Amino acid sequence: MIYLDNAASTWPKPEGVIRAVTECLEEAGANPGRSGHRMAARASRILGDARRELASLFGIRDPNNILFFANATQAINQALKGFLQPGDHVVTTGWEHNAVARPLEAMRREGRIGVTVIPASPGGAVDPAEVERAIQRETRLIVATHGSNVTGAVMPVEEIGALARKRGVRFLVDAAQTAGNLPIDVETMGIDMLAFPGHKGLYGPQGTGGLYVNPEVSLSPLIQGGTGSRSEQLEHPRGRPEGFESGTPNTPGIAGLAAGVRFVRETGIQKIHRKEMHMAETLRSALSEMEGIAVYTPQGSRLPVVAFNLEGLDSLEVAAILDTHYDIAVRAGFHCAALAHRSLGTESTGAVRASFGYFNREADVDALLAALQEIRKFFH
Ligand SMILES: Cc1ncc(COP(=O)(O)O)c(C=O)c1O
View 1 (cartoon, protein in one colour):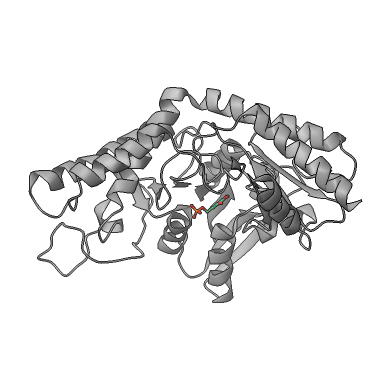
View 2: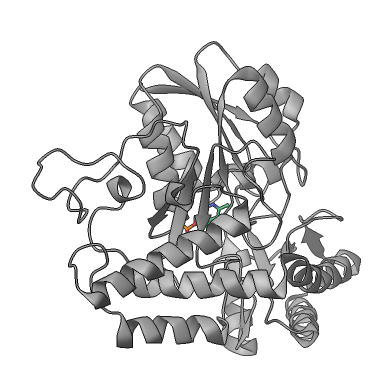
């Protein structure tokens, strides 16, 4: 199988990740933070180590401000629903994934918040000046994806962070496509909340993700329950991280996530990015020169994602042919990003998306190009 669906979940995982998950299951399978015995303490240390690895990667001072969730979607829901109050206004972008767009839309329909969506130019980023113009008296939050999962367009997060600070508005960044792919520093980028998946560019297992929350931001937990702390009290604890991580965590997954982050840090984000971008750019430029192919990823894109369509063919059909006849896995359709496809003008067709990871090889690009040439010839 040639796997070109790394923007959904990276695969394969580094050996160290598989080893860390197995080791946790074999040797530290107790419940962290609950029982006082040594194996439980070892499981707790796994969570602490993972928080420290992530804190180093994202420039976070206190690792306890990193909260673990099952994926980026849960982290984003916690951020939005735990922060926003009735009457608040939110500024967001036309590139958002449904993980952001749907909870915002649900809250808007319930009449709890107002939302302004800054439209995105096809293939490009949003204009920070437009974001600033959309700020109203009631605006408490700006929410932006760092990078589009459809075209790879990267948003000017640093500029938006600076203007959010200047205007006294909090800033939530969805780093689903950029964590592990682009440098992120929450302090210098002015990021108050950073939602990240563990299973994409951080090379951890599925079922992992998290949210960084600036200590000055007040957040209510979405879920209450057992935390292993102050068990004699009925009142739910408010401390971080335990007040936001009720119930037994995914310790084996988080052990794998820590190993994934170590892999990224040891290999180097720049080295990973350079390798992935070389393959993505080879594909993007070759597709741009082929007749009968519409390419949506702009030249100079900074994420290893290439979106395209074969004219006259449904994107889902192309993906199914690639899978069944060529053993190539890509993603087609709408990529959980209705807003982005509206921005691109592909709201009725969707697109085929090939996305690269560190373990792809240049031969994978050649195989995809040859398959697409054949498919095109067959249908025309
Ligand atoms: C930009 C973006 N945001 C959010 C998500 C949701 O991530 P998760 O599947 O970890 O919830 C994705 C996943 O594809 C994404 O690409």
